[in-house]
Length: 374
Image (cartoon, rainbow, N blue to C red; front, side, top):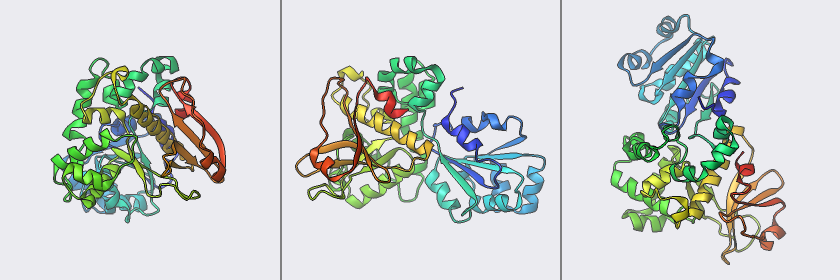
């Protein structure tokens, strides 16, 4: 088993009278994580699947006495695919309030649906966690840096979804399965997201613009829709943990781009599958964008798991001065540039350093990247 960073974090939050909510995109390993948590090995655990009819009947609009009878003798109750259960928020509230000796863990791939159904009933009654695809640091912990470093170019092509990582020699086959309609199953079930063709066009446009600023009006023209629809689809894709936004930093310099944004994929393999490009890194014209997306997504995973109090940005001025990645801490900034060429030399913009309190500036390349993402 590849040990997930989130395991120890979740184990540290058990049996405090709160429901554990575990979110994440499909196929990131939520069920596998919960089934194999070491801290639950000596606990009597009941596993329920929200896709099953009898489980839906038990947990839809239920009552205290019925739940007490169903869960008698168990220390832990795991509800997988909880978003499939009508009224799940109210049922989880009853468990949190009336079954305090039982630890409830609910997982859901449609985090935005599950969150909407549980946010109000579970106010103050839950701990929320998000599971991403495997991370570089998790794989280093699994088989060492030397081995994972050898596989770097492979990861830049096929990414870190668990099924892909463990299918050595068949990465493309399994990545195509995950990147197909299965990944978007929950999204396409929403009432306001009906056009799968538009969704695919938008994802392809975003994939081709990785590392560049995105303009919703331009995306609307490219995909044949309007900017409001683009904004709505991007919001849903973000809530489904397929993409994330990186905003522009704008505080002190007159000519800074104020409302710019870049969009990256949580997994570069998914990004490559969307544009059907599985060529090796050395043969690609987008290797710089791949490198940037890989590093930023790995850094963001690190911050999420460590609950780092940091805000992340890119920076650009109308004079085309630009910085790839900036971290804002309480009273200082860390600044990073990403280069695939180990010999590339980059100077920090004097315009930026004159206006912001820069604690450190680093060029991240294949010779030192592990320090940035571990």
